[in-house]
Amino acid sequence: MPAIDRRVLLSGLSMAGLSLALAGCKSTQTSLPELSLMPTQPASTPLAFAPANYGPVQDKFQVAAFDTSNMNPTYLRRQVPYDGKQPPGTIIVDPKQHFLYLVQPGGTAIRYGVGVGKQGFGWSGTATINSKQEWPDWYPPQEMIARRPDIKPQLTKLQSGVGVPGGLSNPLGARAMYLWQDNKDTLYRIHGTLEPNTIGTNVSSGCIRMINQDAIDLYSRVPVGTKVVVLGSGAQA
Image 1 (cartoon, rainbow, N blue to C red):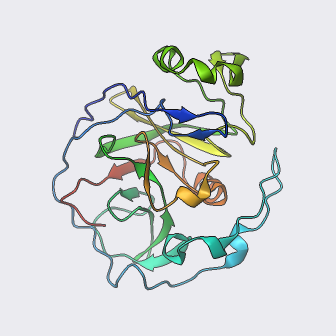
Image 2 (image 1 turned 120 degrees about the vertical axis):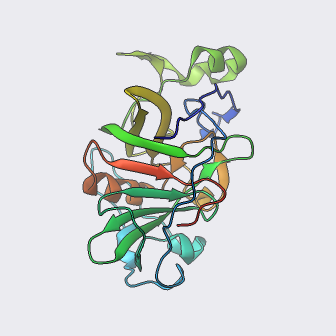
């Protein structure tokens, strides 16, 4: 399994509006071998799409409806043809195209639009979902707090340290899936976001961000132990 070369990321966060490029995510530039993961048809050809997927969600906290008219429809959840070699249940992330695929039986995949690492914060490799949390707390590293003292008013003492409690003002959004490799936390997550209009862009510190409705949907479909493949620049999904 390719190793993920971790390095501490301390990118700036605009906590005034909680416009957060998560510092809790690490970055690497490790390449993957070429993978044969090509859809059988252009990825823009959908099999199914329901705008109701982005309506309000009654949850621990009320998730507001997402106005899909403000989003490039390419990045909205849909089912697409898939004839790659990864087995059903595998998550494949294509940072170049800003897509996350959940492979399904029968030659299809559910495709979600995602936001990925900005320049200098991208990574590739293979990991496993080690744990999942609904409305997770967020704990910025001490290095981030020292570098950005302006975030201190947003932090509070939580059960595992100083951070931002789970909820509508938390940068991890409604759901988080924690990526591990070789029994170690990579500090990368697949998670919801406060900024759904950043989907389809390179904006994060290496984490994979999703519209909250999509993060909830993916979370409900994948168990702990799910394999996650993040493609390098030379691979296609």
